[in-house]
Image 1 (tube, rainbow, N blue to C red):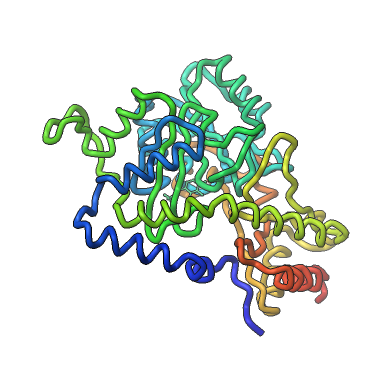
Image 2 (spheres, helix red, strand yellow):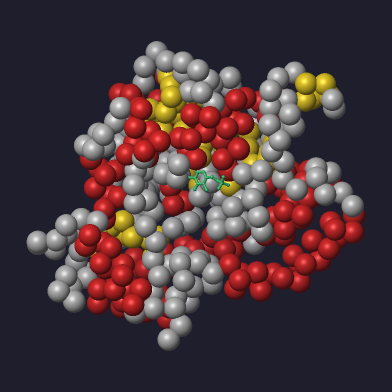
Length: 381
Ligand SMILES: *Cc1c(COP(=O)(O)O)cnc(C)c1O
């Protein structure tokens, strides 16, 4: 019996290998490997897709976030509000910029920022909010933008997991002042290496980011400020240009898979399937369930890990995003949070399980996943 992996990049590559190979070979023969027309073409196509006037490609989603913060001069003494239930980069880049991450708890129904608590966390030092569209589920951007505007705050959308997701018909990454994307291979739009982009419709911010990603230089060998070197290479741009044409189809396939999972899981007690919020069109970067309520006599975390192990023994892989929230990470001890600071986040870290999710996943495989899950839920089993 073959193992069902959490995702399978080789299968997707096979479906587009002829186009990708040709695009890569064209770049290799061109002799232009960094910047140049390929990168510009991809930037324009990506901006058009997201719905902004510009996209600035860079080396990673992490750099995209850092560049955005720097472009707004967010730094020492400033506070930036974000979620503790995310990948480290959402907060790490705030720290890299010398500002202070301020965490607020999440809404258990969406895994995203609890917007009532966002408003309560705003202080005179707050400069920006980084909402994370976690697992491809959009944040309620209407409400978030209203809060930001009322307090004159910048909104930097961490859209790393949400390329193509929509809020009220607008793509995420086009609603805040800037959007930040990752093209890490496992993301919905993934390169064959590292890559990222910032999207914005503010030409001055776009120009600042272009300078910052090129050693703080607007004219070659003339440097106005300390920047970094964070570019997308032409080979990755060529690959992404091909893959961008398939993104809508792949996201549709993910939506169909998510709907089928939800249908299969709904009747199973002890499992809470993730549901889209009204107004949101998710892209299901992950399909993450909660194992809740816990069976009597079991401990959160341990129970989930046992279920996961039992599924693995039946040939079904799953993942835990994320086992430890950011406010309890060693690196963030100095911020002074502790166990109990964000109870919903802490509870969910013990309950979540991400099931296999990739566009090529078949209905038969999904049935095997759900069968293995069901079979593993019995605490005695
Ligand atoms: C992947 C990811 C990032 C960082 O992207 P990289 O390209 O890996 O640097 C940032 N935020 C979130 C939510 C992510 O999932």
